[in-house]
Length: 56
Image 1 (cartoon, rainbow, N blue to C red):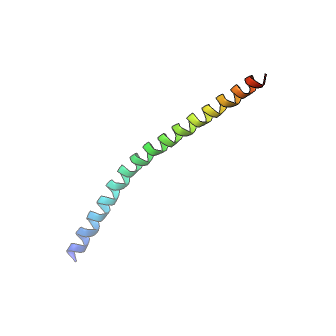
Image 2: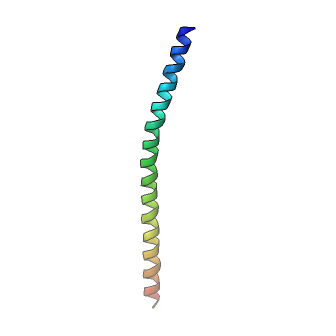
Image 3: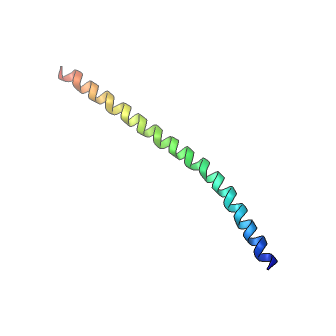
């Protein structure tokens, strides 16, 4: 009975700490994806502007 309480406590502590580290990892990944999207949009705008200039 006592072992079950200790086991549940350890599982909860691991879950709490793993959740905190996971959020940092997801935040970094989200920032990288956001940066790629921003570069893609900027490049698309430059292409459209260059195309309009080339058309005259």
